[in-house]
Structures are given as C-alpha cells and as structure tokens.
Image (cartoon, rainbow, N blue to C red; front, top):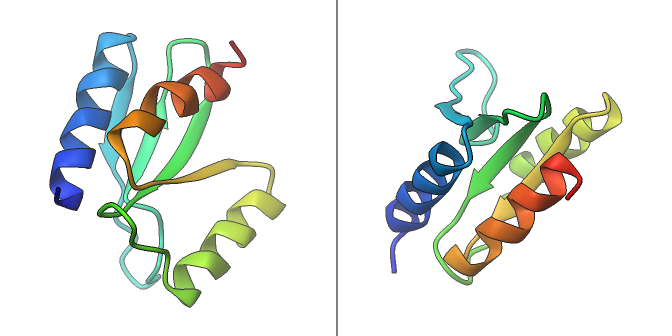
Length: 93
C-alpha cells in the first residue's frame, strides 16, 4: 500500500465526519506535516502520512515536537486502520 492510499482514506473519513483535510505546505519550512485537519467539533490537528511501516524523518520529528510544544495535536498515520481512532481522539470522543 502506498502513502497516497492512506492519504485518500484520511481525506474521505474526515469529510464523512463533516471536517476538512487541507493539504499543508509551508514554503521556507521543511518537514511540516502533510495535512491540517479541521473537524466540525472545533478542533484541529496536524497529520503526517506515511506508507505502512515507514517512519518520520528526524526533521519531521523536530517539527512535530515544535507544534506539540505550541499545544497542537500532531499524529503520524501509516495504516488506514489508525484513521478512525485518530479522528475520535481529535474530537475527544
């Protein structure tokens, strides 16, 4: 399975729950998460997507820690099966 398949499933599931999964690109700052997820419960989170079994690069881990230090939720998803639980956690359900 490819990262793009995991990403498509995330986008579909977020939309199904009434949210938006925006592609997140930050010119001049490498290593930012792939998606900014805005849920209809009023919560947002950053999500890094990976192919199954792949891990975040050191710079991505650094960006994750920076965002978490600011109080944001940041997740790394490498399996379609993780998506539902992550979305539940974002909204606190």
